[in-house]
Length: 154
Image (cartoon, rainbow, N blue to C red; front, side, top):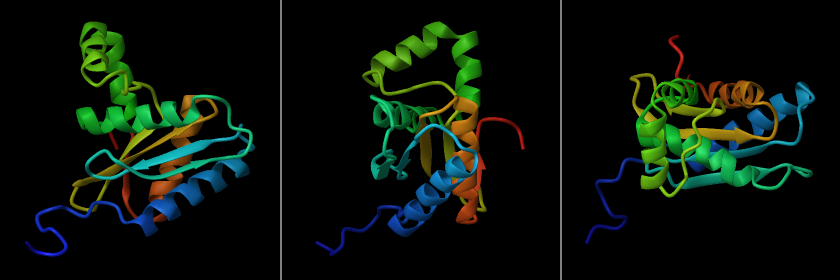
């Protein structure tokens, strides 16, 4: 058996995840937001990095994870998830049931794409208003030179 195992796409590196999270938190501090939690998922929707600022309230890790996980599950950003949730609540309820309640369809979940549009992972942030969480996620993703897909047209 090859070592390491072959056939797995690398997605986001741990180094990139650290830069994304640090830049996102720095943006939150610059905007004077409430304490944030940043979750970076890899291409398999597995946690790559979780950072929770001092003073972040209860359930922020789960909410941030849900924002990122929902994006990975459906293949688009949190803004599109929110629109579809409003238009098709039955579908979103079914999705929630299928994934054990792990999809949170609001802004603050952002897909991370490379220059060819390939999804490398997702970032979810929770702690302030969802729109502000999203601003921080975008800042983090752009800090590593990757494309942030919020679910809105570019």
